[in-house]
Amino acid sequence: MNEFRYFMPTEVFFGQGIVKEKKDLFLSLGKRAYIITYTLPGRHYALEDVTTALDESRILYQIETGIEENPSTETVERVAASVRAFAPDFLIAIGGGSPIDASKAIGVLLKNPNSSGLDLYSDSTLESLPIIAIPTTAGTGAEVTHFSVLTRTDKDTKQAIAPRIFPRYALLDATYLMEMPLRLSCSTSIDALCHCLESYISTAGSELSRAICEIGFTYFSHCVEPMRTVLNNPACAQSKMPYTYEIREKHMMVSLIGGIANTQTGTCLPHGMSYALTHHKHIPHGLACGLLIAEYLKIFKQPENIACVDRAIHLCGFQDLNDFSEFMDSMLLLDANITPTPEEIEIYAEEFAGQKHRFVRHPEPAGKAEVLQIYTNSLLKKKH
Image 1 (cartoon, rainbow, N blue to C red):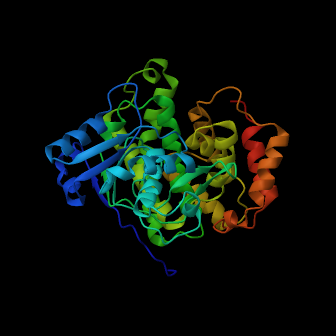
Image 2 (cartoon, helix red, strand yellow):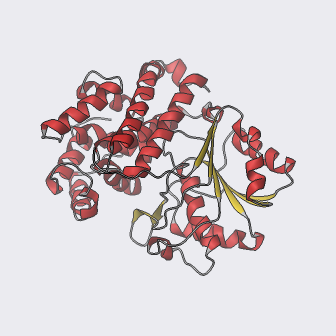
């Protein structure tokens, strides 16, 4: 085996009712907490559980709900400035990737009050206040990764901050996924699977990280038929709770495993290429990855890489790449007018191909031609 390093310092607690069961963790981090989350149209069960635990522990807290999807540098600067006088001892991030990513950047700015938002992208030595992450979606795995991706309005793109910030604790309860809308379920499920697939293929992968990915593929295979049933049945699709708790647990496990694997390897071309679609066409991150992943898996030419892709696809529960591609298409619940023009695609491909670091973990030679092929075949040759 090749030499490898494995590092995943977040302590994970997984199970129903885990927030209430582990409420002493909050007290272990201090007496003042800042909660970063978002508003929900119905009850926010995770926030209710957290505030109950904090009240019982007599921990003071403030709540921030103004985190947008794909949060910007300006947002995290604003939030950090607004809470600085409160002087929290730790942060609690509740939600999907946006609140959790934002909390990592906000934690850095609070820990380093003389640093600016732009310093987030240049100074890797900056540390954060402790963070407890509580996911309410099953896609990013941000609760166990060190990544924090923000929108840079000054550069008209998305970019990860330089510090590597792991949450201290991650509390995972699939109960919080039960009322997730179908479109969000599809988007986050795709994101989680793409993390596993891209990590599995990455040249940065190891025997251990690939073994972890294979566990994720197996969990995903248990969800394929239930997802097909829901997508093909309008009554199920419109249900308030389209999936059972058992399926939601599996969704959450795929997301957790994708985060663990992604932390070791980083992502490959589809994730980086998806940023243009999210930023310019406002396509949700997971759906943007789902648009590209099948065509990405088709570009490999070397037999060992084709065999790697085939093994992953079969473990996920699909007969072949065509079967996988059709399933991905069924999951893409997109608006009708999101397709870029050929001219826009050319710009996306040119800009992406100029970022040489994006290709470092890709296992075969690739450049603009391959990127353009993926974009074109994904976006222009399919009808959504």
